[in-house]
Image (tube, rainbow, N blue to C red; front, side, top):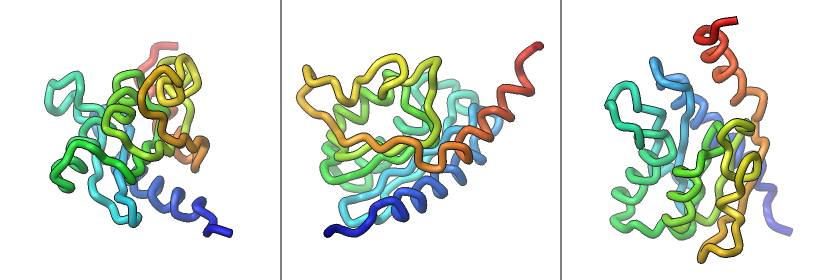
Length: 155
């Protein structure tokens, strides 16, 4: 029987959470891309506010950095771990990058594209469907987002 992957997913999610805490003043989302052997290839957090780039989501930045680290755009064998369910752009990028697996923490009922509103990663019409693992450290991943938005919304 293969090793239990949950401890590995939790460890990667803790690294993604560390990235999420670095996102200030942006939405606290962090991502990590690991290679086939489990080594971290890239880390990133949201940088839209910092860069003025609407595509500077944690997942996009981590995927770009992982591709640079590997010297290729196909991230076959890699895992994308992210604190929040990816949006359509990020889910699409992960599919197009050919990651083997997407692991995420908190669900995003307002913009999630891996089961909440859409299911881009598991759409059988696409030419690649990564494995999806959900709910890893979900409460820990949701907490910084809840704090972030509670200070910005008028009641």
